[in-house]
Image 1 (cartoon, rainbow, N blue to C red):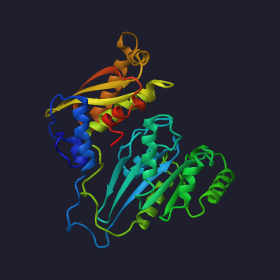
Image 2: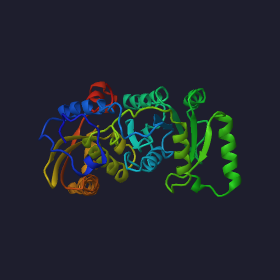
Image 3: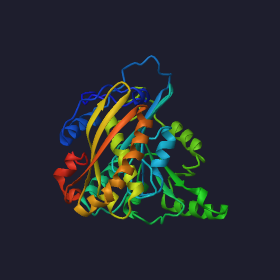
Length: 345
């Protein structure tokens, strides 16, 4: 994928991307990615393919960590746009997933879980979530059946004051044992968000998600599409490579190690039937570097194999993946590094 291409990824792009430039530094690659992220192709004016009464709008998904926002986003979009693990703080960026039909365009945004920040990185993550309250046509506030409703009360109070439609999604209802238990949870949330319409769901089991989608379409304002009707997401191909690798780290390491890592793709060289990728995993301490690599490099090799399989599935091509590990002390609290890694403008 050319780093000068500023159009968003489409489903066809996933199978057939243009050839990428060869090796560059991580900083230069990130700078190019930032331009791609920031310049989604606008929709052409007066598109003859649009049906009368076409609807278009932004639907932002917010909530606390680990309630299933990314699972819901992927289910609504119908594509695996956000990575999913059982660990909190999986999503670090605001990620768009775009759904198109002749009748409407829905621009979903998955956001990081709301939390009290301990690092500058988490301050940036919180800004994505708070920003999602200001530019939505419809807000999806996602909770689940085990979450304490009083958690992050300040953010919840902001949601309660919203003038736009708020849909409260109570996720993971497959975990509850009785109708009475569900009714008690719904009643509690109705007190906290009295103006919200409530949708008990199980995104994992696709329960009640279709009804949620129907309501979203009903609430969309009429208007032309914001982006081309073949757009799937706002992120470039290289972003999804880093997310796949980061997902494997989250799944295979415990405690602080996965949260101290960042992945940068330094090389994305595509040929007709294959892609050569070179990526660097950054950690904060030498001890974390040793844990990531493992004895004799076994752990890093395992991460590489798992990531390569998913990357090949994503692009539909064979992939040669090289992984390296470097130490960047305290990068989560260093603004220059957060800018380099794409978290701060």
